[in-house]
Length: 112
Image 1 (cartoon, helix red, strand yellow):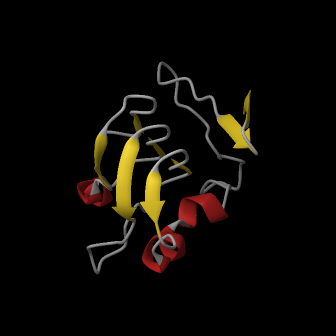
Image 2 (image 1 turned 30 degrees about the horizontal axis):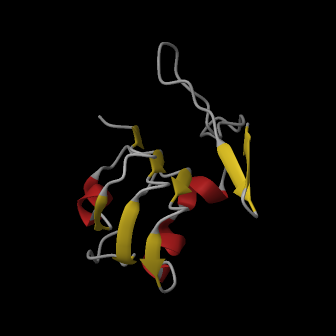
């Protein structure tokens, strides 16, 4: 199952890809620095992005607020503890994608 989707810096010109809501294991979604536009609204009644931990929509042309349905369902961002009580936030399984983050603050970028 898809856990990480990073299409940042690709000059993709489109609206928000709502079909990504249906990916139950998606943990990282990076759409930064493209030409996405329009509103970021949920098209589903059921919970969207149940395991999402990182969402990067920066440097696009989105309008309006982020859909409340998304924010309410970002449970994985709210609780960094695993079922056994251990810290699990962005813990990568062996032989998987190596996570790194770029934080942009007032035009300055810093990789973590």
